[in-house]
Length: 84
Figure 1 (tube, rainbow, N blue to C red):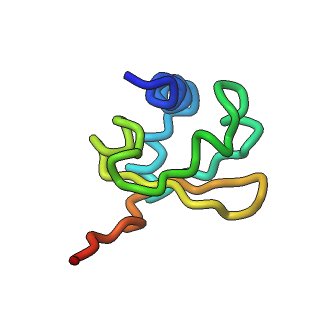
Figure 2 (cartoon, rainbow, N blue to C red):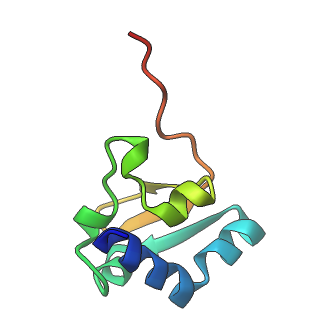
Figure 3 (cartoon, helix red, strand yellow):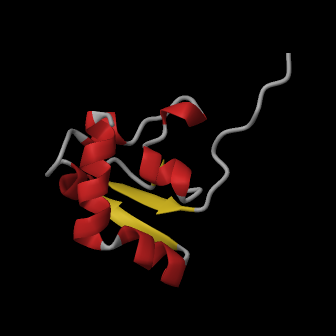
């Protein structure tokens, strides 16, 4: 388990993120909340789907920026397969 995986597990538990996504379709999280565990810029940038934290992959979740200080977590299609 990576440091990001561990940090996201804590955040999901602390803020009941999965429950909120299942109830409301998404969850908005502040960069300051993410920063409580690790730097938000490291925790919210995933260039490839394999880089998503385990809890995101297991629950078909993605994260997108809403602003410099806020992100949204939900069932978004943020990565597409590339055919060569």
